[in-house]
Length: 308
Image 1 (cartoon, rainbow, N blue to C red):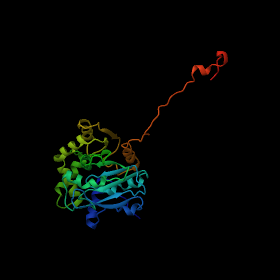
Image 2: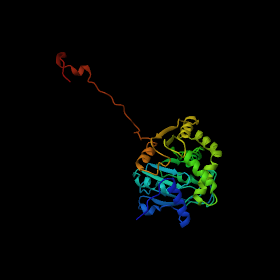
Image 3: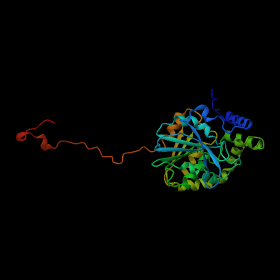
Image 4: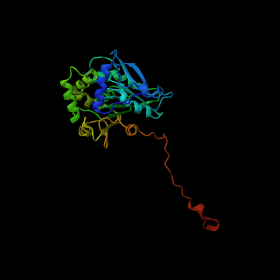
């Protein structure tokens, strides 16, 4: 019997410690939960000539889906927590979720703190099949990285979603975790150590985020739970309202949702992402014309009226 994925902050931390102790890179192997026809692990070469091998999970499709959803995860960066969403995805959608550089099964072993370097490394995820469009989703710490990816790759991204985005300001739970992790930095497992270092070093890099959003031409959506105690929703609302962009940023408040929208029922998460994909309209939409019989057709012989 396959084990269930751990839920919650303490369970996630324990999963990371357990993996370090057992030598595993994945917290619950995808193959134990879903068949290879639904969710498949893949490896690919990082962009930017960095020479790293990166790991991701994806949805195999015999035919290209109209939209490919690419998810850049947060910190710690564990694609595995998206596996239920991938398995529930309809056949007319594809999804790829990556373990960012320095996490889980992705190289390098060392910490990669520069978000612009990470954006270059993850650029191959934006490759699409003919006729396919890409919706790029940046989750938590990955929101800034995804924004830079969209700016660096014009024409390859058709929509940008900042999901539970972390923008330099921590909520109470995140402050406690980062503070505790900073004191235990020398002894905690690699993935937790990298997460603490990333969150601590992000505020000084936010200029890259704001520059990227100002240049992105595609629709930008900010989706945030109003019970998020990791990344305050007020910070996300302020970003959406004050950032100068080429088109207005759409903001969606998710009632009752916390920071981990992907660690619960998949239906609300998939619905929120689907709302970021524009509805396809026919190329020619003929206006409906109400036809009224002309007066001369309503007259019978010698001008008598004929009922319609």
